[in-house]
Length: 134
Image 1 (cartoon, one colour):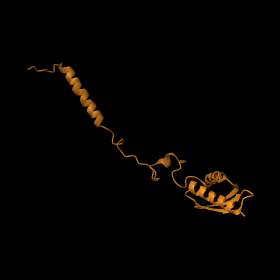
Image 2 (cartoon, rainbow, N blue to C red; image 1 turned 135 degrees about the horizontal axis):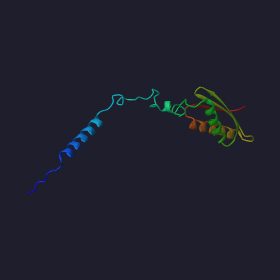
Image 3 (cartoon, rainbow, N blue to C red; image 1 turned 90 degrees about the horizontal axis):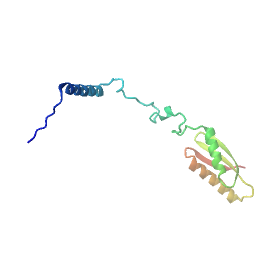
Image 4 (spheres, one colour; image 1 turned 135 degrees about the vertical axis):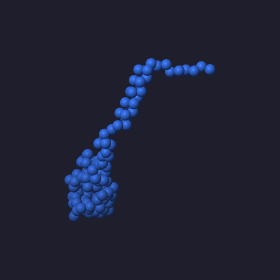
């Protein structure tokens, strides 16, 4: 049976032990300042709105003008609409629809109904009330 022995000179062995000890102490020793927990701002979204103030995370992150522009775009997509007037009242959006000329009463009501459902689907935070303009 053969035995293998580690034959290293003493200065090399002591240098390895010293370097290993220094590496262990460096890895374990840290400033208590770096171990503090950093918290997010108390905005309910883990600090995202503090970092990105224009990021739409809440129902009220957009203003009425942006909502009006979007609603007008969606109303124009409905076939048969000549024009529409929008009125915001808090969580309620009233839309007064003027259908194109030459439509029957049933077709006018269908246009009003489509506008109401289009806006209700695309703007769920508002209660949509669509009426035919007189």
